[in-house]
Image (tube, rainbow over all chains, first blue to last red):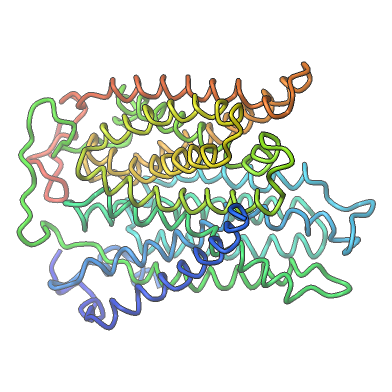
Length: 45
Length: 461
């Protein structure tokens, strides 16, 4: 297997791509955690 | 299309940032993790015909329970059946197929709900979606271990954390969508399933096309594989899936996973009722729902934190912690009811559930240590049959023993005590099974010209 077989798009792995990739999964996850914690507060009331 | 999905097209160029792989794995697992939030549809699905209340002909909860049971059963069996294929074709093609199965599963299920044909929901969500669950679950494992040989536990823990986190997103999202689509003539479930199916399809496709595999011989900068020592569990050799299931280590780990999951899964399904019955008149239904939410967060957090810890203290020691601490916690639970301490009860179960999640997340790295990295997805797929078994064993133990106790005159607040002690005993058995895991004997190794994973070439036997 040589690098010639790889696709050119795979090299575009700069900081921006990394940032948006993590935001795409991080934001929904954070939203889910906050919503769940909000409901969990009822346990402590 | 076939060429676009081929493993060869996914080989990363030099300079590729390996931290792009965990978000792809999370994209897959956050979607399939929706399975844990399926119960949010239970009540609306019992009112599909009556809309505001159940009428004759509406589905019953017992019939609806089979949707989840079928999906989890198919998850285990499809992971076992397709594990070798997932390993062979690479993460992009398997991620693509998982996305199709999961998305189409929802759409077929929605058609079943719309036409009120339950068999179509079983087929769609349970069977087609279940294949998406199984294939999607094991898809990123081997790729992550290849990219993070120095942090196997953390990397797979991050992905499998997504499976726990998926429910945290799906539950409020489904509530929101059902409210949005509900009308005088509809509960909004059909439209919600269509939207979820399409959103998951797009999101999982994004993850599938983002996967890259490292080039042959790639290693993280500055990382040197630890030298293989006698008696250490971490091997540089590989064991094929066919040989792996012939080893005692595989079956010991099967017991380890099965009992660890059994202990957690029964509690997760019964948590709301359990806290309300053990602390009658002190815990309201909304507080109990809060307790379930808290458990979901600990389930997710435990996946990442325990698996990351396993990189430092070793997999065997991590499971020793699960079984030793878990036994103590289960033995303590009846006491919390006796002294009436809700805080102690909640604390015990948060720790127990964190270790339930941690068990799932640590096992791929444990398998890679014991059987090598080359076939880890395939071996992992076969081990997940332990999950299917635990999915039956856990709820049966909790529900049936509780009912047996109540039928014999035990007050409801004490009806779980025997179950807790049985769970503690299961964890003791798991402790000794884990203790018995030793390095795989040389005769099981794949016959190779050299050692060290991808650089190997088969030689004639």
